[in-house]
Image (cartoon, rainbow, N blue to C red; front, side):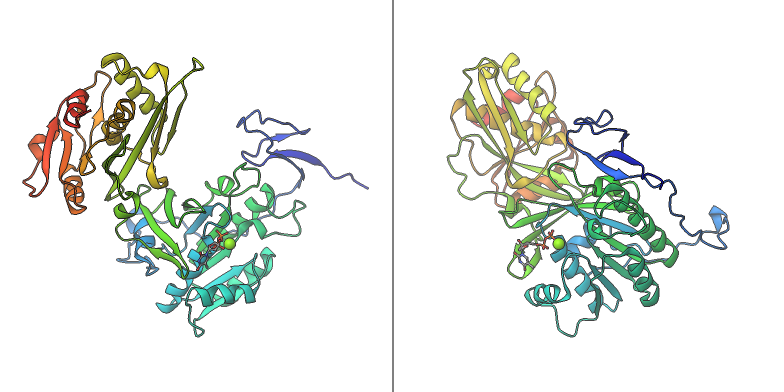
Length: 452
Ligand code: TYD
Ligand code: MG
């Protein structure tokens, strides 16, 4: 009898090795190798019969082809609705709310007259029904459900039913018996997703595929699939806190900068239309190391709070811990504060954090972060009704940011009385009442204005 060929495959990057390795030589991750039986032959995907090349100029664009889910935050974050025939991957930690969100999407879509197939590979129909009752989904809802894990049976069901949207919950449980690996292994996940992508394009059906990620990244999942699908979204948040952020990682049909914010309630996920209020903690009066900023997230301005803590370092190797901001930029700001303005940060551990699990990618958070560090070091608080915005350069100069008026307006809306902005933006400033706008050209001027 022919001996089955075995290889050890990195579940993170698909590197193959003849023996088990502790560290992957390609992606350098640890403990990611799993034994898998090698399939010499790859399964053929049926070609689309009659496919002919068309002239670019002959391609017609229909006006509004997107399917609106009816959950406004979700629609906005994905670029205006689901594109028919596209494949979405919804990733996230177990228990974060992926099944809840997709069931709510299915309900809204079915209310809008779309045919939905919900493939539940993890939960039984009865469990799904209990969840739907909790979410307030009507008994008359026209969502089709199958509890199935075999790919071929799901595919034939999709062919018979011809739904507009198929939801797969989750890809880690789906398998093809001909493939010798266990469900959830990289080979199974990749092959099953390839078939689904093919069916989506051929039948013009939208697929929303759920994928779990684990902290260790050892189970094959979203990372493997990212290049196969049209769009990748991650549902993030702290399981012990109520809000969740949907973030686009890749989107062939829309921007990747938008986020959608939801709050997990007893009745499922609720949209948060004005997230700024959620991310600002209450009673900021008299708190050292806390500064508010207005940053641009996608097309929206979000007010968030940057916190810093400095404490004397006794080991000789000061530590720097940053959450929600770019590490390199914080290191740069610490260097500017230390060497240019004499803040003794080389003898202090520095911690910087953005409240609420928000990630600010743009440099406009430099000025508030630097002020927060200075405030913590001096043990003096910044007035809680002050907001600051600006990029800081290596010589301590404050550089202009874009969309300044939008940011000032948002700060004013939330009751801020004073805003420190870059002098380089002065020319664009429009007259905005009820908020004092102070323009600065140097970081030290902003620190002085905050009375630190
Ligand atoms: P779930 O959607 O099952 O997570 P995932 O599919 O990502 O694994 O969500 C599970 C958590 O959400 C669970 O801890 C309970 C909570 N939850 C609520 O708080 N309210 C609700 O209405 C529902 C359905 C779930
Ligand atoms: Mg689930």
